[in-house]
Structure formats: C-alpha cells, structure tokens
Image (cartoon, rainbow, N blue to C red):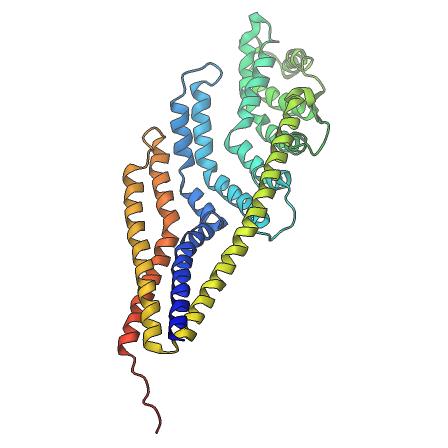
Length: 393
C-alpha cells in the first residue's frame, strides 16, 4: 500500500510541477495580450507625435509634401494625440469584447465610425489641422485669377474678406464628412454631396464690400457713396460670376477603387479576428481547466499525505523551487531585453518604448512567480512550526 501511495504521490508531484510551469506563461498571456486594459495602457505610453516627427524628418524633401505641410501635420498630431489615443482605446476595447466573447458580432466599419472616424473626432481634426485654411487659399487663388492684371491691387480686398469664410468652410467640411465616411467604408454604394455656394457668396460679398468701402482704391478716394457702390458692384460681379452655384462631391472626387479596397481590408480583418476569437476561446477554456487541474492535484496530494507537516513541506518546496526559478529567469530575461533587444535601427521613440513594453509583458509572470515563491516559503515555515494535537486518551 505504501508503495502504491508513493507512486501516486510521485505522479501527482510531477504533474503538479508541470502544471506550475505551464500556468505561468498562460497567466502572462491572459494578463497582457488578452487584456484590453494592458494594450490600451501600453499604447498610451507611446509618444505618437515624436514618432511621426521622426518619420517625417527622415523623408527626403518633396514638392508634394512641403515643409509647411510637414510642420502642420506634426503640430496636428501633437494636439490630437490624447484624443486619438482615447478613440483608439475605445476601438481596441470594442474589438476585445468580440475576441473575448462578450459580444457575438463584429462590425469593424461601425467601430471605426464610432471612434477615429466619428463626427466629433473628424470635427476636431478639421479644426486642429486647419483644413479651412487650405480651402481659403484655394478660393483666394481661384478668385484672384479673375482680377484683371492692371487691377491686381483689388486682391487685397479678398485678403481681408476670405478669413470670414472659415466658420462656413468648417461647417461644410463637417457636413460632408459623414457621407464621405459612409462611402469609403462601403456602407453606401454611391456618393453625392452638393454644397451650395450661395452662402459663401453672401459672406464674401458683405466682407469684401466692407473692406472696399473702408479703403477704396486711390482713384475713388473722393467718390460719393453711390459711386463707390457702383464701382464695388462692377468689381464684385466679375468675381461672383466665376463662382458656381454649387460644389459637388461624388465618386470621381475620391476615386471608385477606395471603397472596394477598404471593404476588402475590413472583411479580411474580420475573418482573421473571427479565427482569433475561436483560438482564444480554446485557450481561455484550457486556462480555466488548468487552474482547476492544479487545485485538484493539490487536493490529491493533501489526501494522500493526510498529514499537515509533510503536505505543507512537499507543496512548499515545489512552490519555492518553481517560483524561484521562474523569478530568476525573468530577472535575466528583463536584463537581456533592456540590453540586447535589437532596436538600434528604429526611431528613438520606439527604442525606448519597445524594451519597456517587453519588460511590462513579463511583469505579470514576475509577480506570479514571486507570489508562488513566497507562498512556498510560508508553507515550509508552517511545516516546521506546526505541532499536531496530541491524540486523545
């Protein structure tokens, strides 16, 4: 009987050690890669604006991407970085809700529309990126071309009037953003946004007239109010005649291939996430079963020993050895990651972020191994200090 019990104890102890070796990596994976809070936190540590600045600075000069646009992009990313990270974090949480089985369906297009392509974020992007300035410059260049060469001094009135268009331009861009997003995400097969330019003409007329009357041309310095009005009307009608009644945005403006490409990319991503959800489901089931198996092994060892001192000493030594070896291995791994991780060719912001990310991935396993080792020490101490109660006569 003792031989059989000893054999059973050896088998259970071996399975117990093997299970402790497996539970560590499983716990680390469950606490990091499968934990949306960990992912969001680590993404929050990444300095995106510095990364964008480094990437842009390494690009050769190009007329298609002048220095002014580069500077504007860097400043925009810097201003929007907190909001961008918040939107990305929301998107990551929504995706993980599907991966972890909290939701039954996944619609990446809807997730994008609710986060980084939401009306609120696009409005912030339009404002911070100063999109209105690009349109103002476009309108100014187009209208200035209609002024006769010998009257180019009249362009200064446009210089004073064009800034008044900024609120209207921002409003129209925000209105058009919704249909454009629906089109590029494939939710609508066609795109047709018609922007009436009559409000722009009215704003431009009023503001240009104010500038004209405030500082008329030299040859009209002594003209009466009626003469100034007639002269302004002649001047403005030439410009207004060149402005169409509407501005239309359709499929040809963005290109017909964009929705198909994005739809295909989102479809492929959803298929990959569906497969990942299935794999994660099996992993999480195995993780739970492994924990239950460890508890059953401990129970089996306790029942076989049926004696506190030997039970606690056996379990304590196993915990201490496994936890201690894991902890030592993690300390060595952290040193190697901090010292030898090949990041020399990466941007400096990634050079500091990636090693810390790797170290943070090991932290749950480090805490677990330390806790297991401490628990082992506690059990060994119990095995020495415990005194069984004397048997009753």
